[in-house]
Amino acid sequence: MKLIDPWGAELPEDYTSIIKDFGLEHFDPKLFPEANRVMRRGVVFAGRDLGRISEAIKHKKPYYVLSGIMPSGDRIHFGNKVVVENIKYFQEHGATSTYMLVADLEAASARGVTLEEARRRAIEFHIPAYIALGLDPKKTTFYFQSENQKVLHLAYEFAKKVTSAEFRAIYGTNDPGRVMAALTQAGDILFPQMDQRMPGIIPVGIDQDPHLRLTRDICHRTNEKYGFVAPSAIYHKYTPSLDGDLKMSKSKPESCVELPEPVNAVLKKVKRAKTGGRDTEDEQRKKGGIPEICMIFEMYKQHLIEDDKELDKVYKDCTKGELLCGTDKANACNRMGTFMEDFTRKLEKARNSIDKLNFIRL
Image (cartoon, rainbow, N blue to C red; front, side):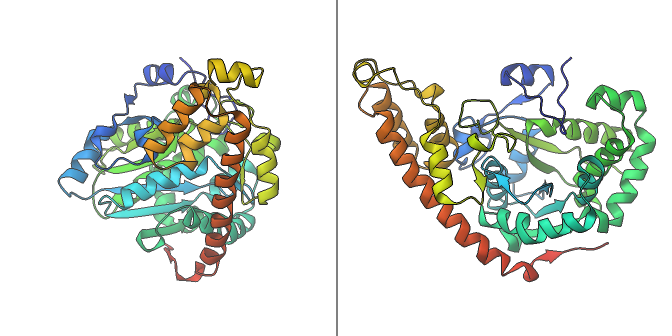
């Protein structure tokens, strides 16, 4: 059995095998009305108990959406945009409540970030950045793990239900700091049900699945006392690195689009991105390009082109040899520059409104 480490750098190479190995559901965009761009295009590829959320949307029943912020740095990368887009989708499709937690305790235990530094980063950057990417602050409740006593109480309750061997089987380690971080995550995921038992959807990358599996196991083991509804999850693929690696990572800054980042710096990276072009222009005009291995096309698919017909035209023009890589990169630079300028403007606006947000302290 493979392991997925939410704190590590090892990445799954085959999403199909991940679905099989971890008992996930293949994602079907027909389950959800008006599926968003990343749902329609296969960027969202798997989930758990998605039918439960689909039924809640269809019959207008209560459900919540929850995600977390790990304030381990002063920037995020382009891939975080997918999480926010999926949160936004559920906010627009009947979610009764949205919770955005700041994982300051996990940052302290797993990343060595002080609580004070975690708070500063969250307030000054991470929360405004999520709002700039599309999170609706009027529909969102925010909190810091360290200030939510109900979450901490749940974590200590859950500690009675998980053995050291079981934790090692899920995470590959039973380091005490990470044990507590994971149990606190379970408390976060189930916290919205303290007042009302209802389904919840957690949009995450596949590297966070261990937390979902642990939480779902805990739900079954505490059913008699709490009666929590096991959380649903929706998983998206990673945004690839511009050099073609599976996941964009800040450890490779030359191939990672960070937010925020000066426009000129981003455009230099885009111009160096791996493409599906041929060795010469003549060969590409004759044989066409290969968009399936082109990082520019992947950026279009995941982030930069909203209209499906427009994306399809780019694909066809590339494969027919009518769109060459130089022109394609120039077009991508224009789109990326527009996005980055818009993001920067919205980020500053969100920073100026931070005192209006709904924070809870329990």
